[in-house]
Image 1 (tube, each protein chain N blue to C red):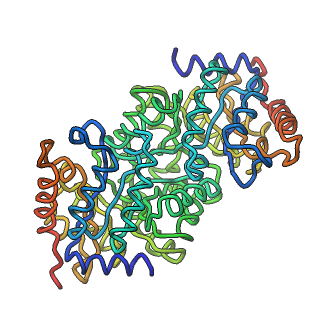
Image 2 (image 1 turned 90 degrees about the horizontal axis):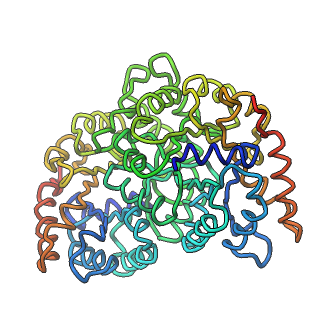
Image 3 (image 1 turned 120 degrees about the horizontal axis):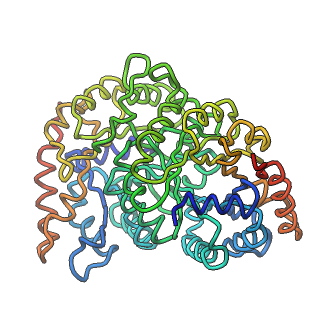
Length: 264
Length: 264
């Protein structure tokens, strides 16, 4: 089953375009709760609300917790097999090294899709596209994202040039989406106008300040879908008290309400 | 001691500008030799020849061998403390995530420097620069590197724009070098002309086809140094027979001979 088909089904089943990012910061976990248990409980408490989960591998790597990430990915496959798993790793390296990273993402962790950087060009992304879906960094959500992404190339910003290249060429090599931050709705609208109905992974809602309703208005495709709007910290760390799991679900429900499918 | 001082000392001690990349591909290891043992033996057999070692984390990650990488980095620190350790990871993410990757590189693995991608801009690199040195991807060695890196921005290719930004601004935030492939000597010359005496990490010699002497001619700085010319596969897999370690040293010596300091 293609990634696109899985994602379509997950949009319909969850009724919304919410993706929850799993960024387990040891300094912010509830007292006595380990990385795996924290992520597992968040996942079990919110799986009916989301169209995807997105573990951020940096948090696991910093803690030396690759084993926890393996367990988490197995748990997702065993208990929530219909929910797509996107490994947020932003890989980007020459072809022979990209093969190794593709093995990491798709074999070791069983991801359905992985985030990648476009900077090294087509042959750096092909090894991923042969084995699964990718979300290519386009216009990111951070303050410095304009430093290079907005440089003018042939009369348009670099990120639009990349968006066009991905939608016109890389989609012939495999399943592609793009990463476009919620913190820049005008840019999100421009990317959507450029790439047709490609799925857009949109971080930046919640802790980073992006607005969910504005994101849908700017980024939904012609069918009213097409987005995976990610919230991580606002959900995960909604409360540091014993009610952390209920609080996380409440924030997820609230965020989701601005992201429900309209059946347009 | 700064990274620059350590690198200066390593150039002088080794008498050359050879960096050996540690890319342990399980499919190519000598029979019966594990990932850690392979890398340790290569390191011990060649440490007097090199100005740096550069483990490529993708190979360890694909094999689930982060523990081997930890042991290898500890071994380097214990037995070859004067040789700089560059973690090749090509990280690039928003600030809060970059903090986690910096913890991985500098705390967990004890790296002296890490390779990073520029695509997300200044705030994505700052967390690394606060804690160690970085080598920023500029013009990479792979066939598709021109897809975006050579796009024209303000009358010059994007990679030169990035080189200028790094040398004029990012060096104020911490110690920077650039990654420029040996497979494009003209571009290497252009980068050197743009960035003064910043160290350039130059992959692509050996298996990827770059020529060592041409690399020095195009890329050395005004003192005749300034380069870390990397060879990985040509050294590591010089022989698949029982003579693999002697063969690796012979290839390293031969590569090094084109990279000796001229005392210019």
